[in-house]
Image 1 (cartoon, rainbow, N blue to C red):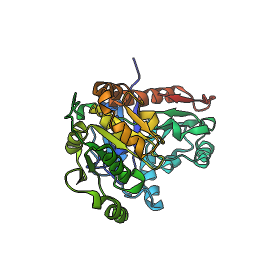
Image 2 (spheres, rainbow, N blue to C red):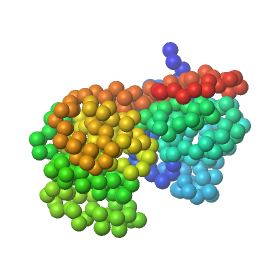
Image 3 (cartoon, one colour):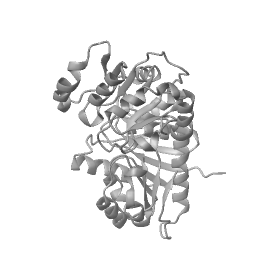
Image 4 (cartoon, rainbow, N blue to C red):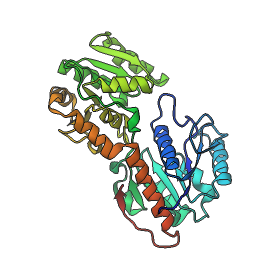
Length: 354
């Protein structure tokens, strides 16, 4: 019988767990905390005061992960309340673990953002063998697996919250869902949809600093018919949007670590068409759960081949690779491995897929 663990989870302080609208990592943290609690573990979450979990919540007093003072306050709270933990897992700042550097308690740092060799080397010097790392994509790690113990654990989705759609209308629109800013490629989604002769629904918030981009590159094309902008969406609206779409467009122009919206689309049975960059080739099985393209023309061509894909195959892939149950099991296995591995013994230097 597996041991019952005392697990401390740390988030960044800006958003509650789960978030009200956007906040992909906070969603992962929520189903992780709930899943671990359901499996009998004692879970303590350090997070925004409006967070809601079945386990124990320790609210932060600091509200910004970019403030040194707030970071010190939040790290102190973790040090005060996580002393009895069997394992401490941060999805927020590495600095949150610093006050526990001299303890042998296993520590896990999960990266959902680009990783630098400098930060990993500094962490290994500070924490020694008591720390290991996870990345949500293999592309993030590169050669860093030689610097420390790494695991690759993709992000996931609570499958019960996404309704599978076996089929959609023949003229179903394409969908773009995400922050409406240049690096996310909504302007490329418009171009691809037009070339493919498909309707497009754009959903997402416009950050204030990107309003000029929206006004210049998006707004002039929105006609309420062929190109529709619906603004930010909640979970119910997201489910309806993704489920009724012919495909999700993912024309990213930056090295996005994961892109949870792709897993959400697959959970609805909706294929993903994306540019060959960062996490897209790790999530999309080309020709099975979507298509991977190299430019706008390729996106448009792929949009004309959607009918050849199986929506059931998309849902099956989401269940097998990105479901909440699979991700909770992956992290649980890492915790058991870390607890069983004495901090003073030689740690296995390898990169593992979990």
